Amino acid sequence: MIKKLSLFVFLFISSLFYISCKDKHVYLYQVDPLIKVLKERNYFRDEIDTIRVAKGEVATIQIVVAGLTEIKNMRASVTGISSDLSTLEGASAGWVGYVHVGRSYNPPSKDIIRSASGYFPDPILPDSAFSIKPGEVQPLWITVPTDAATIPGLYKGTVKITGVVGKKTETWLKHFYIRVYPVTLGKSPLYITNWSAHFSTVTLSYLNNNEPVEAYSPLYWELIGMHAEMMAAHRQNVHRIYPIWHTLYTYDDGKYTFDFSRFDKEAEIFDAVGALERIEGGHLAWRSGAWDDPFFVEVPLPDNEETRKLRSSPNPQKVENGIRFTLLPVDDERAKNFITQFMPALKQHLAQKGWLDRYMQHIADEPTAKNAASYVTISNYIHEFLPGVKVLDAVLTSKELAGAIDVWVPQLDILHKDFNFYKELKGEGKEIWFYTCVGPRGNYANRFIELPLNQTRYLHWINYKYDVTGYLHWGLNYWVKDQLNADASRDRGRLPAGDNCIIYPGYRKLYSSIRFEAMRDGIDDYQLLKMVEQKNPGKAKEYVNAVILNFDDYDNSVTYFRTIRKQILEFLSKN
Image (tube, rainbow, N blue to C red; front, side, top):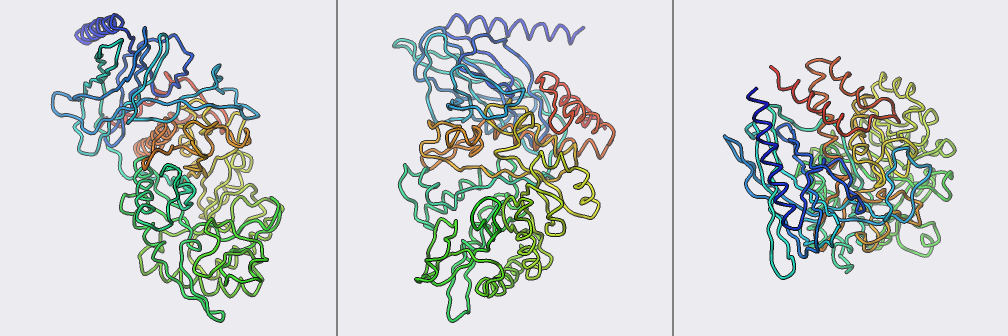
């Protein structure tokens, strides 16, 4: 009876507050952060619900401002968040920006979100003031971090929004509640990598008002560090670094010397922020021509007339220190000469730095059945000179690559189609991850902008359900010029919207996205499910099966998902 009375009082006070907001030019709604709020939406319910997290998670609250009149220069801040015993620090608030999607992908998901305006919410812009017109809506994203020392309990917080109505500055307040459970997350057991293009000075120029950034300059390393912090904050713990591209060479009569200091500096930056559980050695080989053509290895050779005639490398630096990067068949004597010197030197250096156990090596990206033979040949050669180092790659075929890979990363639909093959590989001690990118499409979960946010989160429930211990995506920051205002369906729709990036560039700063936040939360869900498994494997299976029905079939009800997640936290809270 007391609980029912307390709830009644809470709802009554909230409704009075809600009415007062209406009388002051706005409605303020709390909307589940798994809901993408389209600009044209005009009906909401104020979902006055408690946000529930474990210690170590980030609590996310979404508040939607619906204007009854024009409001200019809106800004938001979070005031005290406290319980009877403690306070939560470090909260931030940012307006959700909108990006344009000019062309939808095909075949579409049955769950695809259609926007009449063509605009979708995605970037989170904490340093911007926004304005709205009468009848317009604007979502606000609030994040509240917790850690292992956070005292469990119910916390009340307030967001303050100010804006100019006419010539007068008005202030509106909205309360929210966070329950922190006596459950503590540790280091994530799931391997996660989003490939970054920050080695490209073109990419980094987008963080510098489109002005060039000199490779390996102080500004270059500052921007690399910014990426590392953003990635670590979103549970990225595997990072790709190209050993060939970041090594300085000298070459004299067939003999190489190697300077790995630039490779080391990048690794150390990521290690310092906790984003280097494993190191991905960037790819050694590339297609020699069309998609199904054989792979050639990348070789640094003296820059002369002969090497200029060879097919150039995809390396964005092309030529450095009198060395030109070129592609050669692995059985070319110049390729053999380089590999037999470089690989042992790299292995020795990694061992000296204490990184050898963390290091994995890419051979070539997405081998197909038609060029698998060249991949296998190169892999066998690399295994010879990097004994004990695992080879990993994203693959679009399966049986043709048997024996050549140690960490298999099939695309999600390939994992689905050949799942028995991958279960056999697991039985042989191989690691299995999966990846998404331009595909799979259709009804498979992905992180496309036009998909519901819970499907981005569900990627890591899929990891748990099918006992797949890692996830890879190619597109952390493969921006185009003016990415915040560009068409998000890049290359005239060849790439589904959002595929090329999940963070956004500002001037010497990075912006997260609501998709990146959902991905982080899904990674935490994976750890919670593993914790349930330790107590009761059957219960963990029950929870994941309630949400993930198959590789490409999910229960997309946000309300039901919240119910399941609450049950997980309550189960783990029991002694």
